[in-house]
Length: 222
Ligand SMILES: Nc1nc2c(ncn2[C@@H]2O[C@H](COP(=O)(O)OP(=O)(O)OP(=O)(O)O)[C@@H](O)[C@H]2O)c(=O)[nH]1
Ligand SMILES: [Mg+2]
Image 1 (cartoon, protein in one colour):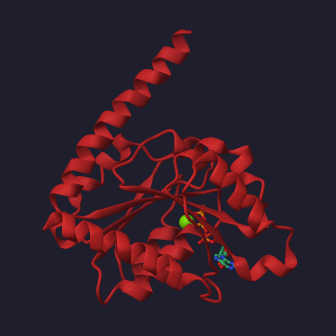
Image 2 (tube, protein in one colour; image 1 turned 90 degrees about the vertical axis):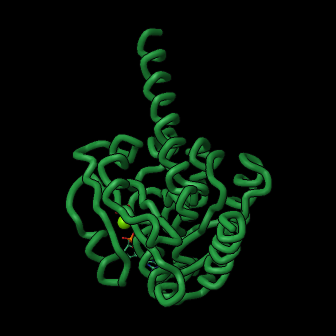
């Protein structure tokens, strides 16, 4: 029982910190996304394509969460966005304390869109709230369409689900409709997009979703 109480306390203090950080993000009129998925589902690829397509009109900054190394940050920098790498040193998720080491060093007044790429994991990142307006969860076609049923918390906390690597659909057993059904059951109304970063198919739908959220943020900021 004591262990449960300790964990609840950790999560509650993380939630409180995320709220303070989100208020700071809001103060600058920045739209913030928390990108989550299992390892290798295509988070960094989606960030790269997004930077390439939007860099002329949207000021983007990316926070990369990885257990170790800076490979993803190097990819994002090469695509043309500002980036900060956070190494979690073994932790399977990002949390508010880790973001606290990065956020003060970012000039939010020069940012329209902040993307936080979480550590590749469908379990722990769902529990730790981050300063993000929307949780976006990716499921890649080679992973299998059972993921929402097996990792429900992640999908209950997602505002958008993106099925990635659709170019591989002819080669893998993946039931798009099963994912849509499971997501609709776990969190009714959550949109499910389908795209391939390899062929570019479906990227326009993602950019349209993003454009809508950016426009709403801009309007709210006055
Ligand atoms: N066929 C295909 N491969 C893809 C697609 N998107 C990404 N990949 C490949 O999938 C692998 C993993 O992609 P990443 O973008 O690094 O995935 P990630 O989710 O950022 O990975 P982690 O940060 O390690 O969790 C790479 O080899 C990509 O080239 C796609 O649309 N189609
Ligand atoms: Mg990555």
